[in-house]
Image (cartoon, rainbow, N blue to C red; front, side, top):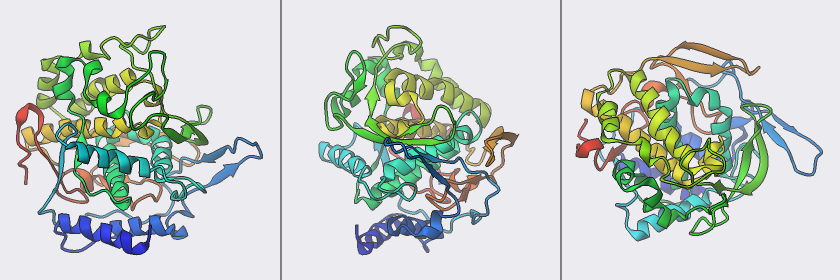
Length: 381
């Protein structure tokens, strides 16, 4: 992709948000495409072996590395991008979404590994930050920033469509195994394995987590796998209702009425989020799960639940609990969470602060849901 094309994408996005001025966040996107060494040379260490399988590891870097400090964006969001149910997208829009998801796998775009793709970079961030992004306060804020990175890269590949979420609130009463999503994204074979049908048939992923060294990535191309099931601890796995029996109307009442950010976060992470990862199986059991297209639609739905709670309580900047941070030696420290905490994707994008992603139309965010839980309108200023 030529620099002029990148500039067009950036200008298009900023016009959508009616930006007063571009932040340095966008210069980072430009640097990704240009593969400017200054963006990442000091943030990553590579260790390759002589083995023919081309084992490459990326270290989960500590937070003591000198990097630019994130700041509150000065962008004005007066024309938010629409984030809608995947089912609301027209067939042409769905096809465009899936086509550009495939383009994220184009080789030669990675800033982390030679010959890698944008998707490889996203997966390596998810693997490297597995401690920071899960089971602590950053789960919601880190994944909303991750979605922001995903759609920024989608725009760079030429995507011009709306953002999408998986309307699980609609699907679970009919059974997750009957979800229309599988008619579009392809399904799963009875015994698991590569995606057997649809536009993502035999989709490949370039990176796996190194189970012997948590936080490290193993560069190993493989098929993205699925194994639909109703209980991931049962042997043999049986598709069943794909965890639909866990859902009920009271779950959504509990989401909307949770008393604190932490109570909401723990509820979402252990229910809707975990059940969906577990029921799809295969790649979704691993920290390489961003290679699965449904991952991004799921996390947009988790985000919609969080934004519904914020709207219901007028709690746009309510944030509490603890953070898990890993240093360069792999040791995890736990401390109180703060709006001033940094979110750093190893130089994939500029480091920002938690407060920059707390509101869907402030900081670096500029989107609006077509509807929130229970049919509420996303009217927050």
